[in-house]
Image 1 (spheres, helix red, strand yellow):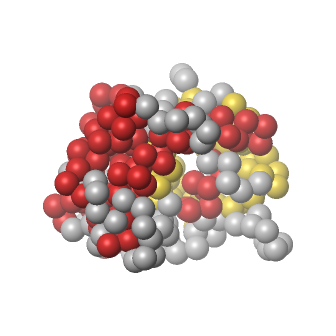
Image 2 (spheres, rainbow, N blue to C red):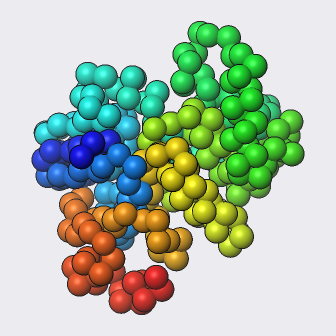
Length: 247
């Protein structure tokens, strides 16, 4: 079994805070899995993604991604991760074109000081085509709708050719058709490129058959981890039964 992500007894604390945002998290994700993370607000879901991505210092425990200690090799790890945060809305006066924003994903891959090549631009266009936004390439990113901006940020993550995708509420600003397309795209990237995917979502209707496991969080801890039929009893203690019946 090849592990893409491994957290051992991990606790992380935001700067200026005393109480850990996540506590005693132990989690192993195999290469090629699709894992959905659910739970109520302030459960620690976003913090979990930030910890995996090396954006938060580890107060206790260890985090290894692709075999590397994130505390020692954070930059190298992030070169292999496509991360889409939940809060990303761009100011309407932002002058960058959509293609420029997507190309930033290639900068993270090849280095900010290296001149982008024709191949890099082709990768960016390919990623935009996967999201159906290639026609927006020359539009100012700040003039796009929330859903279009969300697709651009996902395209930026995909342009990196990541081994791991971390997606924080990727369906939130999308219309139903776009949600379905994104769900199918996640499955396709996983099957065709063996991309490991971790998705934080409150939209459980987008959890499809390609999902390997569901991780349920509450109060900074993992309270259930497994296939749907194995975790519903534990999850119903913090999430209403109608939440699960929608699956």
